[in-house]
Image (cartoon, rainbow, N blue to C red; front, side, top):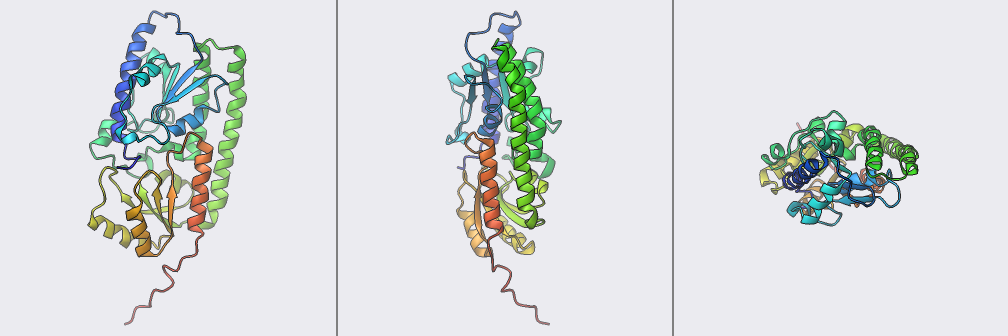
Length: 324
């Protein structure tokens, strides 16, 4: 089972851990007891969020990722150490939209938990709602992979930076640490804008190019930079596509004259490879989760997109003219 076939199940596991830990911590913090000694502590659900938090925090701050790079999120179950880390955290950062689930937002809990989708004013469907359908994302606004859109990330970072400042104060860290967040935020936003600029300039020659994706993670990025997702191989991550659906994907690939088929490093690529071979287009591999460095993940994916979209293909040059 693929590593990104996790969001529905991870949602239940993470929300259970977070709710238990935050509610327990919230009850103890109502009376404002002394904070447990130690550095500022941030907990995030997935590696891309760590890649946005770490550039904002000072040296010595702890950033814990619940589902680490290389771990299989599909079978993730919160460990006692995860629950304890959430309870001690000065800030918990989640994606929302079913990637985990929205948390009860009252007073102290709201100060400690930041949900990316809510910060951006986007949908906040629960993990259960998505899991009921096997995590079958829709396109566009329904796609919860918010971290793959540099423009949305750029909008989110100022909100995240403000919460980091609050976490610094909560941890009673030196004033210089809070002051440094401003400079760190500016530097991070510059890097995000540079990533966006590179996507725009490098993908401009491929405007309106059609692609097939293995998983419905890429609709926001494709729409942002003028690509068209003609079809998705695994609409439901937990289930392999049926022969009928594969035939539909192949038909869509030919109808839209797709330039490439894009699998994901966390998923079995054999079906995607067969479709690419059948259609006669290159196969590429993208990574929607990365290893904790958001910028590196995005640039690696861009390089792969350019490689496959720029690959010369004879898929549509040998078609015969219809006779009549």
